[in-house]
Length: 350
Ligand code: SAM
Ligand code: SF4
Image (tube, rainbow, N blue to C red; front, side):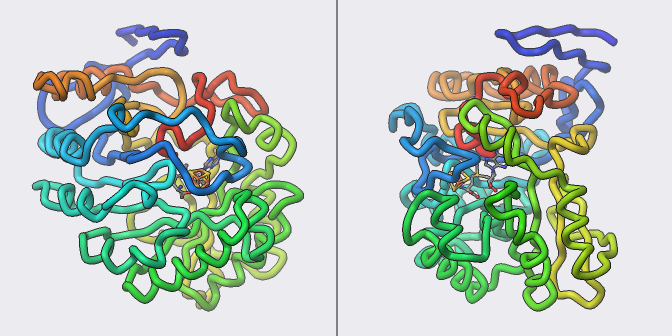
């Protein structure tokens, strides 16, 4: 083992092997990095109880945000280093004006084979066709309940359920398939709906992924008191029918997938807390203000925005970030210890 790096209060990072100076991106643990999640805004039109405080957060100023041209430049540089897949996220990406323009710029980059989008779907009703035409290949939609009054309560915004269902219908009509549904499961709020969600996959080609809530600075009460493990979620589903392990839809990330025999969709679990999957991590993150983060959690990040604006080369900074990518996250149930000062996932693009 070599290369102990400790940055700004972060936990030590012990890289096991040297990071290649050229060619495809690998980190110090030999993991191939080919996927970038890009946050285009820290703002959101919802206030999900597990994500953002009701009063919102101190938002970034307009001039702190990367422009679409700057984001596309980061993608161009990283595509030259083997990046092939991109996801646009936030905050809520659809609140940023003219998102299809960014999609077109990213699609035009040589080497980018797949562009996906994570959204709460509130604004998707009017945008689904344009996003599809611009080149979004795949959609992930957050949906934490099937019951309108619960959706509004979890999102802390009246009327959101109606807009979300309209957005989902528009996405299906626009030809997005499969659609992945992300559902953060919380005890006492929606854990009794796990089986109902699973039942929907018998009829609709939805890939429902149940997510364990992760602790951040602003959700410690929810992540401590309402945590439900994936094993418990799968037990609830098994009570309504036997599930078989399946390969899952394309763009497979850390989820493990299952299906009822003959069902049109699948059920997946994402287990950041109970079963760590960092060993197969293939991604980095770009925040809305141009910080390249090698891990969702921790305080390690590299400022790409200022060098970009000075016209300095950023490839060496990307290699440096690969060198300090930690082996795993160090989240602790009910504590913000491992989240590296992060108030909410919306700040870094969950
Ligand atoms: N606004 C978009 C959305 O909700 O899909 C994109 C950003 S959101 C931060 C991305 C994903 O992170 C969503 O699926 C959301 O449910 C999930 N998420 C946010 N905070 C979380 C937490 N503390 N634990 C687990 N998942 C979380
Ligand atoms: Fe907004 Fe997505 Fe966070 Fe909900 S999970 S508050 S929709 S960023």
